[in-house]
Amino acid sequence: MLNHIPFSSLYTADHGWLKSHFHFSFAEYRNSDNINFGKLRVMNDDIVQPHTGFGVHPHKDMEIITYVISGQLTHADSMGNKESLGRGAIQYLSAGTGITHSEMNDDGDDEVHFIQTWIIPHDNDLKPQYGSKSFDLQERKNRWLHLVGPKGSKASINIYQDASMYACELENDKELDFELGRTRQVYIKLMEGRAKINTRLFEAGDAAEVMDENITVTGIDKAHILIVEMQKEN
Image 1: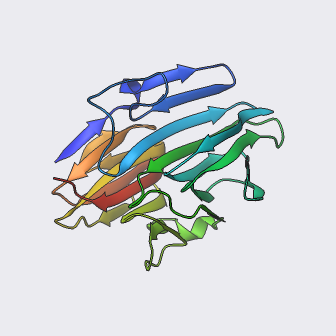
Image 2: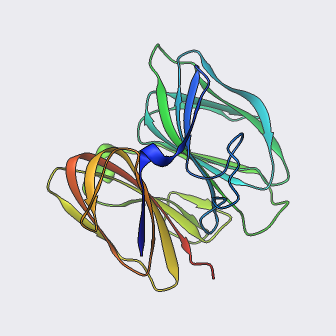
């Protein structure tokens, strides 16, 4: 089963300094039929204008993972972490017992475009933690780069949940498979470009829920892809 979700069908919030597309119920978008996909609770496609951003705000009991598509995103938190991350970088914040943080576009005059996901942790009141990693393009060119995974996995960052995140930049006409186990499910997001996913045409921003079938992605126009893979829920 592949449920194709066109970008145009997503709820759009436009605040001037911020333009967001919500894949799931979030903030002012309330939809009881679209709360989550397994342990994936939030996926927001955000564009933040220069010299603006999300000021200091709190979180608790959530695994927050941000993938930067373009521009520079500056993170600061109550644990003392502060850094700016660019294209292809991943940032992870386990809110656990509670933290505050900010996410700003402080560098230069360009927009910052990123995908932020929230994954429900396996327990509440866990110890907060932060991690980040920047990658060279070659590490994700025409292959899946394992960005995030559960403890004990080979991913660059470990999280408090049996879930993984992968990214790929796929050249035109290149083909890449992703094998989906019988007890697993995937949310796939085409962040940039165009691609065929299991023979269906995807435009930039489109997504899909996938269960009970493997995935084949064919690059058409500079496809930049993000996958969240997790345990299937009954």
